[in-house]
Length: 194
Image (cartoon, rainbow, N blue to C red; front, top):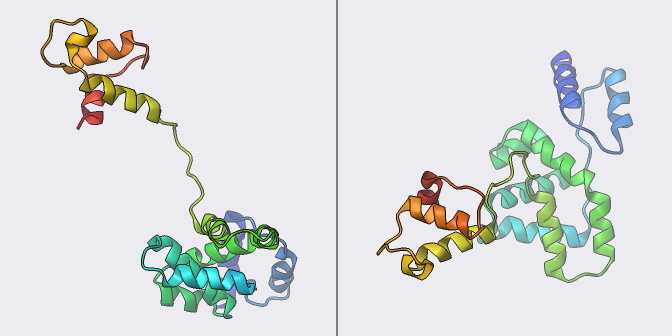
């Protein structure tokens, strides 16, 4: 069992970047002790905000689960016990514990600035939110989409075309002529105008 714990810890070590007290965990591994999760300490204000999120009926479900993870971690629960309680895997529970610990100093700085409750709650929710994922940026901006819909709702006669209704190809040509888009396919237009 001890060997398995160390192997899992090495996999997690390679996959994630640990924050400040990694030396403590490393020394435990060197002594042959099983890996233990770092404890979470919450201020009264943090605990209040997290409790409100965890009990909320209107908050995002992922925020509710993550708030519960942090609260249970602060209560001294292990990742395994917490994972059973919230219905996530141990690695996911550990990920959100580490995310909270990584941002602990920033949250304390924000808390000490005496901000409104709503501003501080937004800050806590940003810690509980997913990190933006990589990918290609959208080809069309929100402004372009609004302009596309606006042109599509105009009559073609306004543009000097002898049509009673827009066809997708004539609308695409008009959008390019007005400089709203460089190019757009008729299939993309049909998706936007559904």
